[in-house]
Length: 504
Ligand SMILES: Cc1cc2nc3c(=O)[nH]c(=O)nc-3n(C[C@H](O)[C@H](O)[C@H](O)COP(=O)(O)OP(=O)(O)OC[C@H]3O[C@@H](n4cnc5c(N)ncnc54)[C@H](O)[C@@H]3O)c2cc1C
Image (cartoon, rainbow, N blue to C red):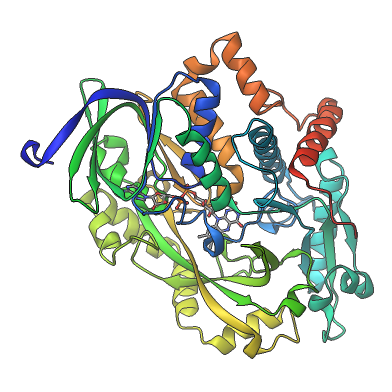
C-alpha cells in the first residue's frame, strides 16, 4: 500500500482480529473476559457480521462431540479394537465450548438465552454387516468411558424406526444398526458469533468494523501494520496492532501469504464447495428429531460423511441432507473471486498442490463425480437414508466453502483437521482447515491465548478469570478420576444453556 493513498492510525491497539466468524468472535470475547483493559478491533469485509462459513446453511450446525461421527474413531486395529482417542479429545473440547457459552449467557456476553443452541439426539446409522459389526465394536469401546456412558445401541429395526421413522420407512430387510446419544446438540454458530461481537462492541476500547477488507499484513518495528480498505468509500487505512489473529476463514491463506513469513511459503489451499438438499415441508420436518450420521463412503474424504438432520434456523424447522461436494476456485462464498485459487499459487506451493493432486486421486475423482451429479443422483444418496424421499420435496442449497490446507512437509497430504498456525515470535496466529470447525472454536481461542499470549494466564487473577469462563480449562476431564467433575460441570452448563436431552 502506498503512503499517498492511505493514512495510518496513530495508536497501536493490543489485538486486531480479521473476520467476524465464530473463531474471531470466540477469541475476541475470551480475551476481553480475560483482560478487560485490552483494546480489541475486529475487521470484517461483509456489510453484516458472521455471514460466511459460520452462518446458517453454510454449515450443518452439528455440535461435534464424537457422538455420531464415525470418522473420529478410525477403522479397527489388527486386534479388533477401536481407537477412541480422537473422539475423546473432541468431546472434551466441545465440553469447553458448552462451558464457555454457559458463562457467556450468565455474564451477558451472549445476550438472552435460547436461540443459538438446541438439544438434538445424535444417531449413527449403518446398513451393512461389516458396518454393523464395526458400530458394535465402536460403541463397546466408547461406552467404557464416562463421556459416552449414555450411548445406546440397537440392531432392532423397530427401535431405529422409533428413533428416526423417516430412516426406516420403506427400507428392505437388510442388516441395520444405530447408536443414539440423547444429549447431542445443534448450534447456530453465526447467531452466537453476532451476539458475542455485539457484546464486544459495547466494551470500552473495542470496536467492530464491517465493510472493510484487510488487504495486507506487514511486520514493522515489532508490531503489525494491517492495511484495510473501506469498501464503500475506497478509503485506505493502516492499523497498527501488537497481536493479529487471522480468523478470515477461506480468506486466511492470501493474508498469511502477504506477511512474507518464511513458514507460510509452502502452504497451499484447495477450496471445496458444499451443497445440501433441504426440505421445507413442516410435516416431514416434524417427523425427524435427530441428526443421523452414516459412515464415510470409502471413495470420499472425511468431509463427505452424509447425514440427515433436523435444522432449526430463524425459527423454522427444516430437513437437511448432505453434504455434497462441488467444484470451485473461490475461497469465500460471499466475497470470493474465481481468481482466488490461481492467485494463491506461488513457486513455493505449486509443487505441493500438484503433489497433493497426485497423492489424493480419490479426492480428485470424488470432486469430479460430485460436480457432475444430477438432482436424481443426489436423491439416490438421500434415499440411502430416507428411502421414501420424493424429489419434489427437496431443493439444492449452496453451503459454505472449505479451504483445505496443504503443507509442503506433508508430501501432499490434504488436512481435514483444524490447526492453529502461529508466527515464530507469536505475534500472529491464524486458523487453517475446517473440521471439526466451529464446535471447537472455544478450544482454539484458549490454545491461541496459551501459545501466543501466555502472560494473560500467568497471574492468579488471569487464571481465575479463565476458570470462570471455562471451569475445567486446566483439568483433564478424560481421566477416570475426573468423572464426577465432568458430570457436575456438564450438567451445570447444560442447565444454563437449556439443553434438556430429547428422551428416546
Ligand atoms: C459444508 C460445511 C459444513 C460444516 N458443518 C459444520 C458443523 O456441522 N459443525 C461444525 O462445528 N463446523 C462445521 N463446519 C465448519 C465451520 O463452518 C467452520 O469451521 C467455521 O465456521 C469457521 O469459522 P471462521 O470464523 O474461521 O470462518 P468464517 O465463519 O468463514 O469467518 C471468516 C470471516 O472472515 C471474513 N473475511 C475473509 N477475508 C477477509 C478479509 N480479507 N478482510 C476482512 N474480513 C475477511 C469473512 O467474510 C468471514 O466473515 C462446516 C463447514 C462447511 C463448509
